[in-house]
Each structure stands twice: as structure tokens, then as C-alpha cells.
Amino acid sequence: MIQPFEGWVYRMQPKVAPVRDALSPSQAHRLRADPQQAIHIAFPECREELPRTWQQWLLQKVLRQEPLPTLYAYSQTFSRYGERHTLSQRIGVIGLLPTEAPLLPHEALLPDRLQGIQENLTQLPLQATPIHLLSFGDWASIFPLLQSYLVCPEFIHGGEDGVMHRWVPIHHLGHQKLIQEAIGKGPFYIADGHHRWAAARLAGLHYLLVYVTPIDDPTLVLIPTHRLWHGPESPLPLLSRYFSVQESAARVPLWQEVRGLRHAIGVVSPEGRIYTARLRPSYWEKLQHRPLISWLHEWVLDVLFGEIVFSREAALLIQQASEGQGWAFILPEMPFSYVKKAAEEGWTLPPKTTYFFPKVLSGLCFYYETNSHLSLSEAKGAS
Image 1 (cartoon, rainbow, N blue to C red):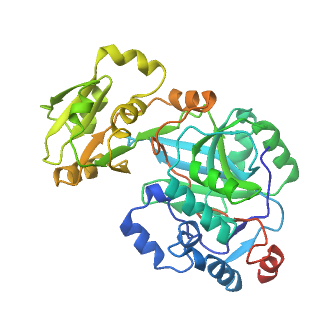
Image 2: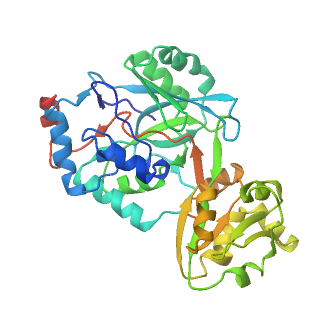
Image 3: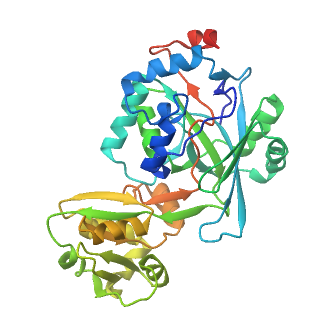
């Protein structure tokens, strides 16, 4: 059951940061120029400096601790992907869950990413980015309550991606209990934050900082995450065993062409040649069990030796492929039903398959757990 906690928040205007997958190199460079930016905790350049950074923030009174155990009402207002004139609002709750709570993952992990986050948490057991979870529950009964809090938010932040974030603490014990009972005890489906979840467990933490929203939320948007494959050979012979591969003659962008075809992906060679690869009808039955991206990895990408770069920016990967940096694989949107199927049946989609938009921010609040390097009593004294 989601639990309130005595979190840390910015005293003044919050200096929040996008999560790693939504952070461009230029944006990261600009944010790092501010020594009090949440990026220094969420994605440190030097993890050995984490305890010192945290202690400096407390001594400089950058943050304050909530006076009472708190849940947070949190909303994201945004234009749906590809629909600029339609505004949607996602509302959820930020709190804590035990690391042993029934969380259902759906995506495989990248070992290097997992190790890096684990080492960060070992240096400083501080969580700055909530894990986005989806749950069943009686959400309809608490939406009016959450909306009433969000009418007068304590914090507001407009992101560069056009998303408006609002959040406000909920200290009222009765309201907290209503929220806990409505959300229930799970299971909870991981939407975003698989590496943070696994790293917290490996680092020996007892609680996870989480953001929970309804699993049937109509605003849930899955954006395709495309691939740029670097390898010593052409993937076309292997790809052609399962796909009908033809050079594209379409006059629309490749991502748009793929979106309009059935069971197809786009492929761009290092010479800039553009192909559409359509799954052969004899393999369509396999899509009842797993999505196209899973079979692409099993049949091609995981068989060939090479490195994979992930990006939701199709145009960027197409340009890089055309410049000779590798082979771009442009993917269609994946139905959410595969996420539930993988989570409930206990198998995983390839790494970086799902990109839920919009992403939760780093620095909305901070959860400091144990007494490694800096005790909680020292932290309270510094406030």
C-alpha cells in the first residue's frame, strides 16, 4: 500500500530535470551549470561527489523537509502525441512503496545502466525520480479529492516539451487513508523506471519513491523507441528470412509510412537507402503472443554482433544512418496490451521498448532513506 513520507522539496522554485531518456546533451549541459539543479543528484557526473553535494544543499538550505508524512497529488497537462490541439491531463499520487511490493516489470534491463544507478544509490541512498507505476483500484472515488488539491498547487513547472507539471503535498491523515484504500495493495505495473526499481533492490533500500496512476487511464501514450544498430555486416539477409524487404517509394516520412502499414518496420542503410520490411504472412500468428519488436530482436538484432543506440527521434537516427553510422530501424507504435501481457505472464520486452509520454520529472521531491555517509538526524539538523 502506498505510504506517506517526510520528503525533501526545494524551498523556492524547484529546479527539476527531465529523466535521462528525455534529456538531450545540450539540455543536460545547460542544467549542470546550476549547482543546485536536481540533475546533480538524479544523474551525477561523479558519483563520489553525491554525499558532498547533498550535504552542501542541506547546509545552504536549498531544500526543506516536509513537517509531516506526506503524499503528493501530481498532475501532468499535455498535448497528446501527434494531436497538438487536444489537451489531456494525467493525475496520480507520489508516495513510497516497499521494495518487496508486488511490482510487475515488462521490459528487460541494460546491465551498464543498472550498475550505474545501483552504485549511485550505494554512495547516497537518495531517490530523486519517482518510478511510474500503473494500478487498478477505485480511482474514480479519489479524483475529485486530488483535483481539489491541484486547484492550488504548491509547485508548478512548465517543461520544454510543452508539459505543465503541478504537485502539492497532502498532509491530511484522513485524505491519505482514503487515497491508500482507493489505490489498494496492487499489483502495480511498472510503466517507467525498471532500472531504478531493480537498482534500489540491489542497493538494499527498503522503499521506492513512486508515482502511481490508473492502469486504464486514457491519456497513456506509448511512443515508439527506434534503434540504430552498429555492426560489421548487413542485417538484410537475416531480415529477409522473416520480412519482405523492398526499397521504399513513399513520399511521406518513413515513420509515417510504417505507421500506415500492417506489421512493418522501416530500415535505413549506412548508404542512405530506405527500405520497408513487411512481416511475411506466415509469421503473423506469432504476433498473437509477442509484438513485432520482440521478434525483430530475437530474429535479427540479438543474433548479430553489434551495438544498439535507442532514440524516440526517428529523424535523428535516419540522419545518422544516412551518414554511415549504422542501420536505422524505425518502428511502429506498440499496443499497450503487450505491456500488460508481458507483465502478467512473466516475460520481458527488449530493453527500451516502451516510452510512456510524458515522463515524470526528477526533483519533484527527494526521499532519503538510510544513514550511509550522512544520517537522517544530521539531515534534519541541517534544515
